Image (tube, rainbow, N blue to C red; front, side, top):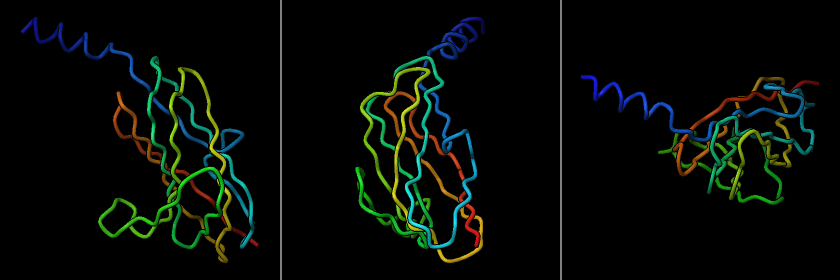
Length: 141
C-alpha cells in the first residue's frame, strides 16, 4: 500500500501545462453591439509549471457569428462533435512557456440579436491532453 501512495504522490508532482483563458482585461464576458465587425483578442495563459508544446487551440462560435479571414484556419463543426454547427477558428501554437500569455486575434461579425452567446475554447496539448473553457459574448443595441 505504501508503494502505491509513493507512486501516486510522485505522479501528482509531475509538472504539466495548465491554462487560463479570457478576453483582454481578464474579462470572461465581452459586450458588443449587434452586427458589429470587430477583432476580439483571446488571451491564453500557461499557468502551469511546464512548457506547452504543439498546442492546438480551437475557438468555437455559435453559427450566428461570422468568422472573417485572418491568421487562423476556420471550420464548421459537424453534428457528431461536441459543438455541432459551431464555427471554429483554429490556431497552431508551437510553444507556450510557463507563466506566459499568448494572444489570439479573431475577426468576427456579431449576430443581429440581444443575447448572451457561449463561446468555447478547446486546447489540445501534448502533455496535458484536452481542456475546455467557456467564455461569453453579449450582444446589445
